[in-house]
Length: 464
Image (cartoon, rainbow, N blue to C red; front, side, top):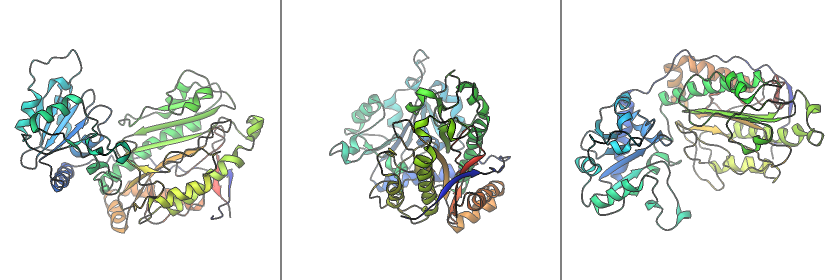
């Protein structure tokens, strides 16, 4: 095992800057995505490709069209011959014009919330048939999850869209639609796994905003502050959320995913917070103390017992990740260092991130999936000791970019590129983490881990 010695010391976290330019995905890129999705569908022998979305599962639809249903459901229909059809409910009708691509909009009012008008709606059968779904057609359906052999012999028939949609498709075509979600979400070659330079710039923008919000929160913590007041410190700027804001202290903190309450913080409390928006999530966790002597007596070795081995594992992860590395190598690093049951590592130590916080993960035991240029990854290794040591956490986003993609990023988004280079320099010069050239840190926290959260100017770094 590589000897990585770490310690906690005084470190000034720089101001890496805040965006003044917001990247956007242009209509031409959405058109290219739609074309690529159809070409993949045609290679599978599909006569039609349907993409279902709702308020909680909008990423695939938004990736292809720029439209995300906000209160109801929606259905995109591709057949490779005509203009894509987008069926929406009442409240999606006007908002769907946010899409910069040409779509044939159809009003399907049963997608709307209950109690709303249904009198002007076409039937689902008519909408589907008009879009080329007919008897004998082979239909691929993208929803938000696909399955493997663990669910049985026919995982392709496991679907997450509503039964009424599946039943109607069976009625029209005479056979069941096939789960085609992997066309977009497969970690090996799914269309959402490899990102364009503009998409990566959008993710860097999001990561800068959300990590700065976490920084404001951590640096403003004090005893007596309520959890609600702590979230107010973040000054979230209104970017679309990928998950509920999570912040908790005291007994509820072990639940992990809790929303804030009016509970007031006390010295010695365990603490966690995580904020996520489309393309980015940052999280930190630890104890509300200034120094080790303020911890409960039984865990005053918190840094030695938990934080130091954890940070050493994260350092090795960061220094190893890169182009051509397979997921099993990163998995092995974490489980070699943190495999003791004390650490309680159970989830994948890293995953792909996109508009949704977790797309899929190429990082698992035995994975032969090689990391590629354009991938956006979440450094996401969460100990769950299940005891008084609670946890420590350093969760941020990075991207991998080969020389050509790096050059394109620097040319097209110079402001963001300067932030990325400043983060790389800080990680190398102050934290002792040497990144490969292709690793682009997107977070303004840049691997910064303060174990004593009431003294955030002291953080972990590599020594010697």
